[in-house]
Length: 93
Image (cartoon, rainbow, N blue to C red):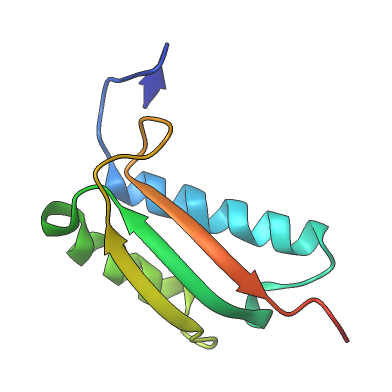
């Protein structure tokens, strides 16, 4: 949870679900869908601490569609979050 730009609790599981749901909404708004994701780049701020949880949740969301995936650790993100995604999806018929 974030208040006034400061992290008051750290929950990678909640952040993973949130980012995956946000991507789903963006895809649908763009006329695409989850199954049309082709490539996902995942940025984690703490690979050692968060990868196991993130990987478990990722597998739940990507049971049927398994796009190319790259996961990298970075020092920080522009906001006080622990995960960010860059996605490429097919939007045509």
